[in-house]
Length: 274
Image 1: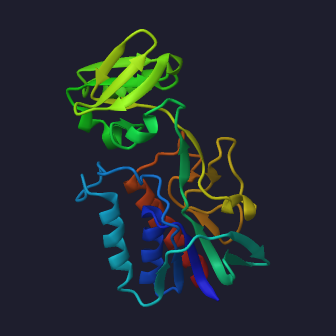
Image 2 (image 1 turned 30 degrees about the vertical axis):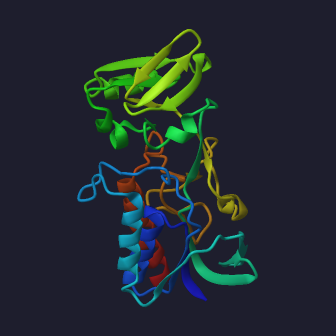
């Protein structure tokens, strides 16, 4: 039986695996190859890696993990998980993997506004986090789609963009990528902008939290405490999928995901040791 299985190979899962590997725990990382930032070419606001391709960060992290004999990574998709008394089983095809602890790091899925062209520009000229992608539109005319976050985004982007335009989603007919940014077709005119910020609908990327009986908030995020623990003993969650109640909401970024991975991995190891 394994000490721990980490499901999800993004920053949180990789860091949790590294932490457990360094403590000589038999840990297995199962990575489906599905990542929230798959369309992003450069990640920002992460010291020593500002502007790095996220795929390169994952490659470097895997190289780090490979140095530890008790840590393993498999590129597979998990079919389901289940509790078996005080332990757990992870089903991958015909294989059943038994483990004492589980770290969920499967992330979330973004559902984009239903506007033609947004999906093609998502993660490039279109973003949702000013801390991750605001500086890249410095001195540009920037659009904000929807009024729900308009006041918040306007405040954050006010000293970055040269001009901010708030657009009602119902008035936007199409978005096209261009050499200068985006061409946005409205009901009665066409405008050009350097970039656009949108709000997305967020849901769990995988069903494993529900399969394990883990509590979720109405927002759909996993309920975790400050140590990454869920309500189910032995099940931890780290990264974008979780929400610590002390915070006003999830604060997704590569840096916070890695921090959550350290915490979940460390507390998981502590419980194994005790």
